[in-house]
Length: 317
Length: 310
Image 1 (cartoon, rainbow over the protein chains, first blue to last red):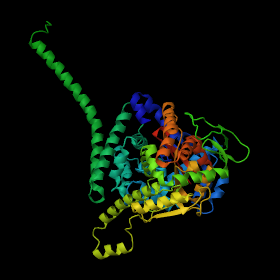
Image 2: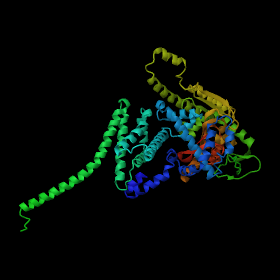
Image 3: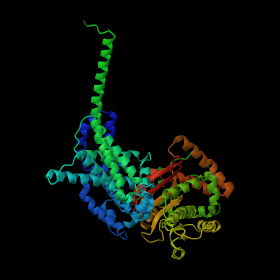
Image 4: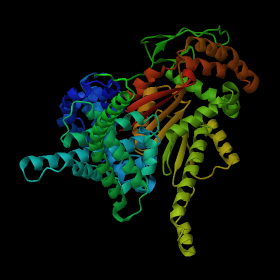
């Protein structure tokens, strides 16, 4: 969305984007794993309707396996052959929910096994499934990482929303922009701390060509989120520059955090503070440069006129 | 929902085989008529005939595989095991796995994964004392297979015999079990296995739907069904070359190497009779598997179907 509007470079991007955000807000909590499947369109449409049906089917997955399999049949979770519209989307919804649960369970094994199919297999084991269920996902663990990133983004969204509510209710003061950005980025990066040892591996997997569309999507939607809650309502080119700047700040701070060994990551937070301050200064510098530019041009014009006078070319008697 | 393939085929004498396969018309036939290659036989007869085919070819099975597929079948089987990506502790059931090809590959894979795991563990444990290391050996924490097991099940005694001899010859001793059983009626309890594979075997099963239902039954929840089988080539040029090779070259090779023209004629015809990729996918979904998918190898000469019991 952000990328596309950037490609066209028109005012269209910022103007209708807030509308799109309202529509897609509802589906932001679902993992991007579904976005990678062709069924995502079907799934997302039916999801909003089928939410109440989700819980009974989920219970069937929770219940102990022995002897319960034949009972599952009449539920209509099979027969994807016959049921096209409604039943098929119900299948996808329960499959995806199950995948979501397996990935969530797998996260606790990441510090030990890394972002690999082994962690997913251990996660599946805790849910009572066979280790072969890890075969549903790609063997390099990409889905696990994307799931984790999307979960972190949702948590950040909720956090920012809560803060915004407090400000609206008058219980808290509205923070100045640089402090807001700093706190938001810090909160988001703190979510990485439990997995910090294996995070470089995750970053490298996210940069694989196969994963770049999804990881870029997640990154841009997160940055957009932060600016949205910071109160950005710009509709001109500064929409792009703001997001580009914050993306730069976020990425560089993340990299600094990877090799930071100071207690409590103080070096990282100081680095973040400096970068945000730089960014704020940059905007005033820009206008300064402009006025300086104008002043310089005027000075040159004056010099040119003086030289012409001296050379006697400006004969106005 | 039952997908038993009843079809009426034109009877053909086995020896007079013109080039170019004729697709059998699919329709309901009166009585339990089945196909055996391009012949029409009853279910009982089919089982008998197939048993005899494999009894005859058992000793030369591996040699024939190598010569027919020019050794590519090894790559196919390797790809199957890589796709499975088993981790140590997996329980595999290899049905129709007579000579043990998949079982041996599984053991090799699991062994190497286990090695890497142990190396990583040891790196963390470098500050242990000698006493502690010795104790961990006693606990058998460092066993080389990590409790993975493979059960090779086949309906044919001869094939199992050849498999056992191969295992002894190649030095595979632990983690292997050999069981005589029918894929349509497995002698195992429910919810036992992590992965069920059937490589180049499901074509010979008389009631494929029953075999799929049995596969569903013996798998644990979350378990995976993998099927490696010859399938249909959609590319017309390749299909013609493939037909030519199948019907002209393979039976001749069978006669020269194994001394058995008819068995290999049956083999080639049974490939043509087997349902194509999409149909098999539908049958697997009917048995209750989810996330059913297939991957064509070599443009459809061989396909790997995968499904999960969720």
